[in-house]
Length: 358
Image (cartoon, rainbow, N blue to C red; front, side, top):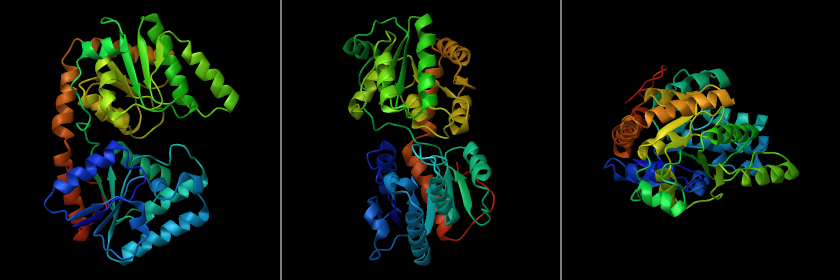
């Protein structure tokens, strides 16, 4: 089986782990990920598996013309007998909420033979947001895989010593860029709650809430002087992610009104208590494992979630999360689910109803 997963987001660990796992499967001949293959016509692929449509057409060049061009390419591949698959990572691109962005995603969904969701909430979202006739399109739930590609050799004490954090201090880590005003407000609510508990928030990733340049500068300076918030840089090497995770007690999913986040699987991989919004697949996965969720970003909701997380620190919840990541989210098994799904599409065994191969 020849598979094309065209994306310019090749540095995302998700892509690396997916490709590595597929390549280990004896039923896979080749896996290509470079975007130019999507626009070539001298190679056949049994499966064309899209991840983020905007990674094929740069978000800087969104236009009706380019959406039409993407549509033509999808029709070309379908004409060649390739099965078109999309994994639903987001509703629409994170940094672009325009009508063209919506049409970009809608165009892909309309041309798909199969749709992979990371949770049941994603199926409901797709139906509600796009109102598509998906009769004949097979849908399946395959969860986000773990992050066992990251080193995990540093102990809690070693990590805290390196970062200069007292052994007994309550520490919450937030991994990932802060991309909009709501996520920025979430960050501020967490810092206010932690201040009352003499806790520390480690923000690993850029803080870019989408304000104008003057307001951005003011907000960055404001956060720099928060004693209980430490901005650990906009970029951290993969090998050093373990320092921040192992130094922390709790991992915050710094997202608001977002469908999916790899932070859930990341926290589980490292045996962390994970807290996040009670929305989308994020809330679905957190509730599945009994982790804290918050219905909104008010201080009251955040305080209740942190109180719940602290209570879980004295239980086996963290280890349960680790076991779940190792067993239910291991990439070898997930690759088998992908292969089974690919084969069902190639054999034209379509179903109009969502199904779960797990």
